[in-house]
Length: 192
Image (tube, rainbow, N blue to C red; front, top):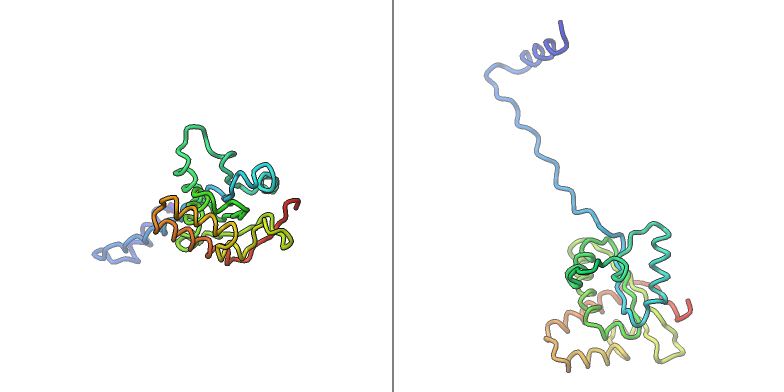
């Protein structure tokens, strides 16, 4: 007797002829969208491009960490804002480099709001870096300046409010700064 015949015979003995077949198992749950990037780098280019962020990006690449840095990953012709916000959504982590003029940039602040929303809703992890921090130099930025929006960060928000930005948008920027500045991060001086 062949194996197929034996299987059919045993199956017919196990199920009465009038009983319906059991329903198929439910499909497995959909896998979450896989990350396109391990890390998204948020920074004010004028402050840290060609310095800290380029070194950080090169180090991450050397460690085989797939990092998104705008000038390295944006293709010519892409819509910048949409591409950046999508990159944040598709990253598992964000390194936010708070520098002296980070809060001057509405682009940076919009990125930060997106990073915080992804952290709240998708398990995204934000990691702050406070760049050019030194207690001896009043021109530097401290974690307290970021969280409390004092010093150069206060000046930036005064300018944003005078600049005609909607109150809700400015309030979202403020909340995002407080949220990320409240995370334990790293402090680096100019030459570190």
